[in-house]
Figure 1 (tube, rainbow, N blue to C red):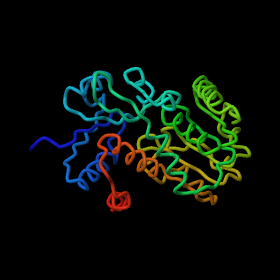
Figure 2: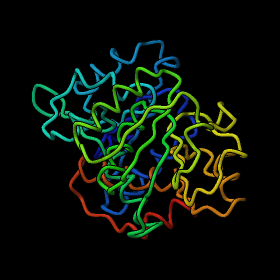
Figure 3: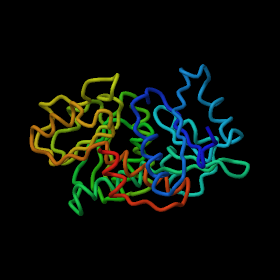
Length: 277
């Protein structure tokens, strides 16, 4: 088989069900380009993630996406020009060019786009976010961009929550940011509920928040998209909340990554239809 026109990858754990290869292959088809998008799982390859990452540029990869649990770890290997992305402290998109790979974050822009598609200009209100890792950091800064007046953070590692809280306060002093020890306590009286942990994804079934703690919240978002109908979102749907599926974040982060990788146009409606077919 001839070499692809565009060679891309995804470094992460537990990504067998990822739809990212299909998204980028379809984007390539729209532009008469053959895309190869490889799942690069350290355990399966018998290598650590750094050994995989460090070899991609020499192998002809145009870029790679980075997912759990490497989004924060990769920062030290990248040139990051955008001060916002430096503040987020996590990258999910890397382009190989020049001496140093360049890092971007399309989780941030993808979350903002997903929120606006589902809720328009409706305010976020007080919002609880469970999980403050790589995707959580991006989503939290997305909440700042959406004007959230209060953000409550909860993480099994409280020090990670405190570190993110400090960064958010520095970026937006007018936003109230508080770290809680338990999701149920933090959920009391909030308008929005967000899961940015891997709980609920294929292989990590469950929910980060007991159903009886959902209370009177108005909307919910789950960063997990495989499956899209997580237990968390199913519980929230049953209580009448507006739902923002992790599939929407997946879609928009992928669209934004494609533009960074290639600069080529996309018919987003067609891409959405083809992915859902």
